[in-house]
Length: 261
Image (tube, rainbow, N blue to C red; front, side, top):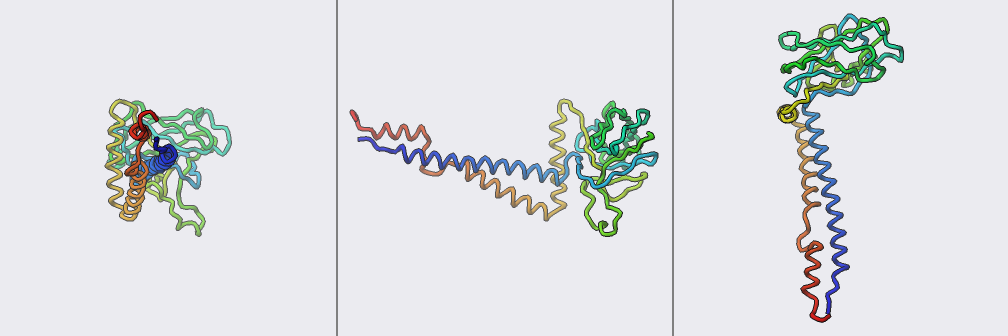
C-alpha cells in the first residue's frame, strides 16, 4: 500500500511559492522604504524638481548644499538654452566656496559643447576638494546667447507664492550672492576611489538619522511602513509549520511505502 501524498504536496508547494513571492515583494518594499527614508532624511545632494529657468549672466546664481562624501569632485546642473545654439565663445564658470567662511575651494569652467537644452551640464573640479560642512556654488555665463539654470522657486504670480518651492532641505538657492527661497536642479558628484563608498554610506546614515529625528511625523510614518513591510516579508519567507519541502515529502513517501508494493 502507498500513501498518495503527491496532490497534497503539490498544493503545499504552490502555497509556499505564493508566500515566497509575497515575501520577496515585501523585502523589495523594505528596500524602497529605506531608500526613500534616506533621501527624505538627507543623503548626497540631488534635487531634480524645477518649475522655472533662472537666467545666467554676470550676476551669479547658485546653491548651498551639505556634502555627504568626504570630497567634492563636481556637480551637475540642469540647463536651458531655449533651443538656441550656444555661443561657442561663451564660458559657464563655477566657483565652489565654503559657505561658512567664504573661502574659495575650487573653480571650474564648462565648454560650450557640453551645454545642451534641458541637459545636465557637468561641472568638474580638478582635483577634487575636501568637502566642507556646507558648500556653496555660484554660476555665471558670459556668452551672447541666453543660458539659464532650472530651479524650483516661488513663481511671480501672487496666487502661487504659497506653494512649497523649497524641496532640498540641506541648502538653499543663491541669487546675486544672497540667500533666496528655492533650490537649483542639481546633483553633487563625489570621488570614485577606494573607501569612498563606505564613507558615503556612513554619511548617509548619519544625515538620515539626524533628519528623521528632526521630523517626528515623517519618522512615525516611515517606521510604520517599514515595520509592516518587514513583517510581511518574514511571513512570506517562513515555511508554515508542518509543511514539508520536496525532499521531506519524498522521504515520507519512501517511509510509508510497503515492501513489495
